[in-house]
Structure formats: structure tokens, C-alpha cells
Image (cartoon, rainbow, N blue to C red; front, side):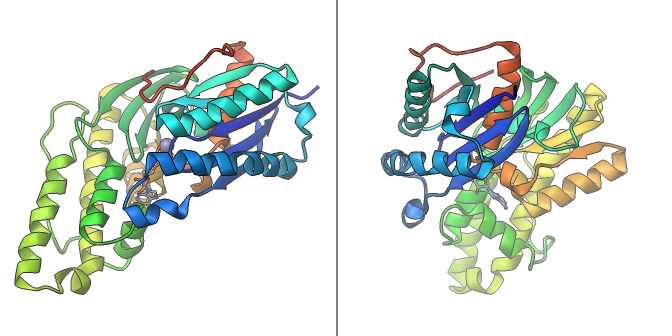
Length: 334
Ligand code: KG4
Ligand code: ZN
């Protein structure tokens, strides 16, 4: 008898469904929401409405791709939080209704833990304990991972997240939301050493990105005052220089934590781990320091239900199920 988990992710603006059989992720369907581009950021009310439109087709596609009947599902895993409450509510309600109709259990998953557990989807897996730099639109964390659900945040941002720094920079540059992928695209064509931005001096393993954001804002304002075409003339170099600074801030702290904990299995997770400069930078730092680096496949970097499915599989094995009375949480620690 095989163990079939259906997983739902709806914490922000992507509706995703996945099917995992015996710990193997067989489908990972992601419906993106383009509606937010025009607003320069995610509009929560619009996000939850689009989740409602997308969730049933996404689940149907995930089952079809995995060649699994809905009657074969043994449990439904879902993102409980952290995230946008209205968006989470759609996924939580769907999971509960599906499970109630089929008389099967539900499994609550913490979205940030799931980003870390995405490393257990593929063939090559990190060994416990390992360190994971989780960088997304809302979080920047260095996580000490002792076991599947035994994780400790040893460093985090005191203000903006790394993805937020990417998105806010792109907004300053007049690029549409989400800006991270566009900064990445332009950075590949620019000179990362053309402009120097400050590295914040924060103690321990914590991060800060708000000072960087302000310095970029003033840098652009001052240069545009001298040359109205400054952004258009230098877009690639600006993106390359900003990306380089964000990447060095992240990797310098990660190196500090790796040295302190004496850990050589080092992983990257979250939406910003799709960034080319960060992926290359981690690999280069890993080669220099004898680390085993783990970088997720692109589809498991940004929000996806595959990571919820693998987390759900491991929780199922522990026999940890949620009650039907469970509610989503906008904030959720672990
Ligand atoms: O994990 P995620 O998909 O959603 C959250 O849980 O927040 O992360 C989204 C973040 C956004 O800030 C987006 O701009 C950033 O990841 N991002 C990137 C890239 N792809 C996504 N940042 C830099 N380079 C990329 N290629
Ligand atoms: Zn995420």
C-alpha cells in the first residue's frame, strides 16, 4: 500500500497543489497571479479571490499529472502560516473540506519549515544538522536544522527581508512587481563593481536591509537630479551592484554561522534562492570552504506545494495530524 499526500500552498500570491506518493513528489502545479503586477505589490483581497478561482483546477491538474485518483489520497497537507490571512484561509478551507468529504486526516505545515524541507524532495539530501539560509519576500533566516521538525532560527532580519530589498529596489528603479527576477536578469548584463553600497554592521547572525534600501533611494535620487536618464543608461550596472551587495550581506553572515557551529552541510531556500548571483556565490564560497552546498531546483525555490507535500509526508510518518477546528495564522514561528 502506498502513502498518498495531497498538498496545498496558498500563503501569498501563488496557488499551488502537489501530490506525493511514498515521499516522491509526482506533481507540483503552480498557478501564478499576474493581477498584482499593475499595483507594484501583492493586493491581499485580490490574492484571496484569485486563489478561490485557481484552487480546484490546480488540485485537479496535480492529481492528473501524478496519475492519482482523488479517492486514493490518504491525507491533505496545507500551509497554516505564516502568510496573508485571506490567502491562507482559501487553502486551509479547501484542505478541511476535501478531508471531511473523504474522511481522511489533515496535516498543518509551517511555510518557512517547508521551504527548508524542500531539500528532501530530490535524490541528494543534506545530513542533520545542517544550516539553511531561507530568503523569501517576507523572511530572511539562518536556520539550524537538527531534524525534520526540530529547527532553530539562529539569525534573522531586524527589518526588511532580502526579497523585499530586491522588490523595493526594483520599485525605485521603476520595474514591475515582483522585481527580484528582473534584478537578476539585468544584473547578468551589468558590472557588479560599478557602484558601492554599504554593508550594515549588525552583530551576531542577524541581518538588516532597511539602511541599504535608503542608500539606494538617495543614490538614485541624487543621480537622477544630475542626469534624468541615469536609470535607463545604467540599469544593468545598478542591478548588478545592488544584487552583489545583497548577496555579500547574506553570504558573509552564513559563513560566520557555519564557522561558529562547525557545520559543513549548507543549504539555500526560499524565493530569493532562485537568484543567479546568490546561487553562484554560495557555490563559490562552498568550494572555498569545503562545504556540501544544497541549492533547490528552481520550481522548489519560490512558493510551491511540493515542499508542503514532502513536509506533510514526514509529519504523516510521525503521526501528527491537525483537528478540523484549526485556523490559519498570519504569523507563525517554529
Ligand atoms: O518564497 P517566495 O516565493 O514567497 C514568499 O514566501 O515570500 O519569495 C518571493 C521573493 C520575492 O521577493 C521575489 O522578488 C524573490 O523571491 N525572487 C527573486 C528571484 N526570484 C524570486 N529574487 C532575486 N532573484 C530571483 N531570481
Ligand atoms: Zn515562501
